[in-house]
Every structure is written in C-alpha cells, then in structure tokens.
Length: 136
Image (tube, rainbow, N blue to C red; front, side, top):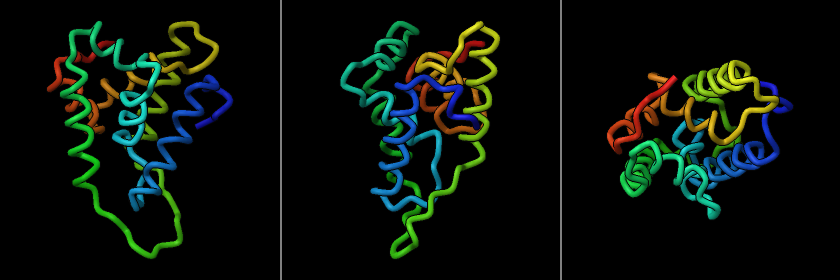
C-alpha cells in the first residue's frame, strides 16, 4: 500500500481507523475499522453514498459496531497493530478501481466501493445486508 496514492481525506480516515483500533485494544487493523470511521464521519459522504445506492446507514452502523465488539481484545500488548489480509485486499482493490476510473488518488467513493466488493471482508456482508449492493 502506497499512501501517496490516497487522497488527503482518505489518509485521515486511515489514521483515524488505526487510532480507533488501538483504542479498542484490537491487534488487527481491519476493514470494519475503516467502514466505522467512514460512516461516522460528520460530513456524511459515505453515508450519503450508501443511501444513494439504496442502503440503510443505520443498519450499516449497527452491523459494523457488532462486528467490532465481537473482535478479540488484547490487553497489555506493545501497541502493535497488524494489517489484516482482508484490509490489504480492500486497499489493493480501491487502488485498482481508482486507476480504472482514471483517478489520480483513491477517494472515499473508491474505498467504500472496495469495502463493499471485497468478499473476504466482513464489510461486504454488512453493506449487502443493509441493502447497499456490490458494484464493479
């Protein structure tokens, strides 16, 4: 993952998601952390994209929170955070989508699209159950 390929806004979301993962004592940095910060954003870009796709934001928020609560917590660790394989795939897919669209950077839209598409990520199921379809 090359952070230079990501918009300034997305980089901020990545940093916020990492901070949240650490504050919840999670050892892995997962797609669920990314989806949580996107749907909780005050500006509401991800929420409006989900709604426009026919999804229910409230259901996404409830689903992602339940997934985060179910994750194992590590107490007394060294604060090391590991990139989960599904999130690495999400980032790769988002970069591919941006490139195909002719975008210079990975945007919130492309990241959200990748979170919905990557089958190995629980976020794909959360978004699908909330009515937000997978699209290429």
